[in-house]
Length: 230
Image (cartoon, rainbow, N blue to C red; front, top):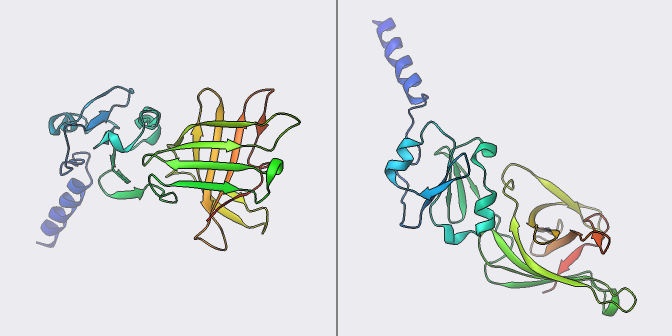
């Protein structure tokens, strides 16, 4: 009899771990929901289309209006190697594990960062979070001779934010702090790092990197730490 019970229990365990798991069958879809296939193709998400994809890697996006088109295009199910669901402010993996989007920057609020110098010596970054994945920005660099340098655009959260961890170093204290990075690839490469002050988490810090060829190159290593102005 013991052997019989062991066989039943083993069968139940194997069944619960089998590839027949019904991924995201309880997710609430809308008429805007889409699926990103492992070949990059997208189509409207329905319960039927999700059932057909159980043996493939895919990403369900419940409401694309929470994310930029650039961010959605950057998502690659083959790189993620999971079945995922993007639901407003969170990313759900294989039904169970959840990662929340960074919330350092309040939605629709404009923040200003500076290196605390004035006039021609000031680095200045102005940004507004326009969606859960994207910011609009403008940065003004110190004057070089008679030239006043500035650039503006929109940048998107790096799609690997949930599997990689990066640090910058605060110039004033020498302490490291975790950052999230936003990337703008059009028409030039720009990177904006945002993180919390390692001593006072109520203050945000930022650094800028950009590559404009012979015109201007700047990395987070030679950009001073920019402090949120309250």
